[in-house]
Image (cartoon, rainbow, N blue to C red; front, side, top):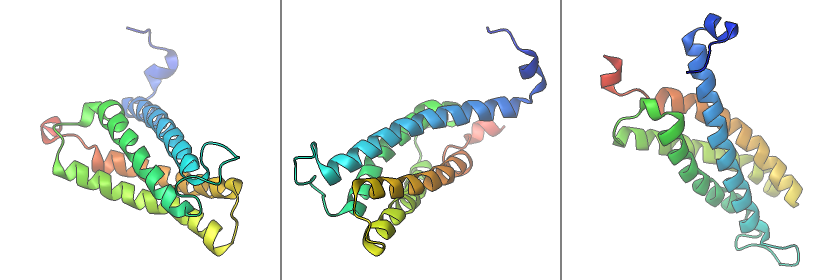
Length: 161
């Protein structure tokens, strides 16, 4: 076992546990972000600049939705089986329902700035679409972290006894 530092002896256990949780959530989120961003750009803009656009070119909000759904799969597996591995029991309907519900809200939070930027403000460049997605992604990440730890990946009843 690693030697405890003076800092770790004075920090409450819940702070150390939350820090580990934040770090794991961040790594899973970074991977999901890469999947989401690459998917969005491939769907919107295609493989090369010579191409006329991706399969959802001209529909950036829909491309954002599809990319977010792909990232949700990465997030589910990463968070369930790594970040919150000590809080899970068998997959339950409650857990799946909360996960899907929170992520559908997160999907809307991520897609809304793209819609506003592209459709209402008429900014239609790859840079503006990606900047709008970053704004939505940051807001959705805060929402997901709070909801995952309090509503989705909660300790099983046996863990509470």
